[in-house]
Length: 276
Length: 188
Image (cartoon, rainbow over all chains, first blue to last red):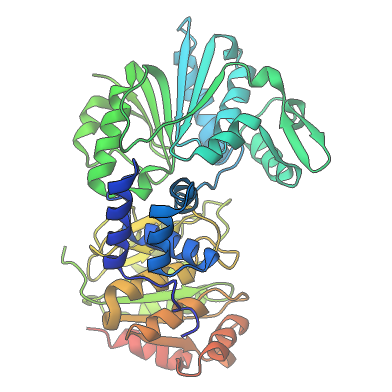
């Protein structure tokens, strides 16, 4: 029974935490996948040695804890050129279309610590499109946004990222785009100029701009079906006509009403184009 | 499709694939439970296990999809690179959170979340492997009233994983390969 200690909570107890949080903060977790959320909350309780009562007490009374709680319960796992073939598909299937526009706006929704945004930047640079592009990176989580802005990543991860980059069909070496110093790699400043990172909550915030390209990858899986459909509507409304929507490899528009408004561009990587 | 009232979980890593095939071959045409499988595999190579197996076995093997209902009589595999979880409303969900015991999908994550939802309607088998994944998950299955079963280490190609589980809790049941096959053969 070692693992079933005080950090183990029931779904009913989880509900009480979700309700409390939504009452006293702007964070509404009611549409999140329950099992995943429960594991994250238990992990946090385990880490901080809190029982349920103490957890709620901290949410109410401890300054900064609500933000910390959100940081901990949302998943922020990402990589530079994660799913390399996805990037190859974007370059080969989407860029030829985007090339015809004088100005391009991109939105990485749920960008976490920014790796996806910088991957996109490199891809755009190599396609000669970066000068006319602007990329917004948003996440619900403030601390990952701060990391994204800094553009500094652990050097030990760069070997894997370089492999990803090459598999994606990169023309150069990934090290052409960062400077290594001690244990860190910092992304070159010329790659960071047309980027804006800010906090945005897909659950409670609304449309803030119109985009030619939106990627929202491995975000929907954390939501229940109803919330997924609401967020897809928000993404749809944020796309200009013939704009592109890229979802995670296991996130599809099939079997949803919204599919009628899109054309499938690539099934493996769930790339869609808005057609009406 | 009928919602599964019972769930049977199979977790395996190195050396488990052959026994899994024997298990699927032993299954009757129809059975009521849903069978959910985690097999550690390299996510960088998109091995199409589901397709290959479906052809070999002459029955459909599904890759579990996010928010898909869990139907009786089906065999589901976790997609590589994602944790597979069971939601309280009896659907699957996926997540790409940190690896557990160096694994994603992790056997622990599936076992723990399935045990929580299916309680005493949950049976879990832990097979051959060379890491510690699965032991913690089996604790949940056992503690929440389900059947926690470990492959007899002497029958496993890689005995580390079943051994580790047996050492973590002596109350887990231990099945030989013959017993495991018999269990699946006599499913209704």
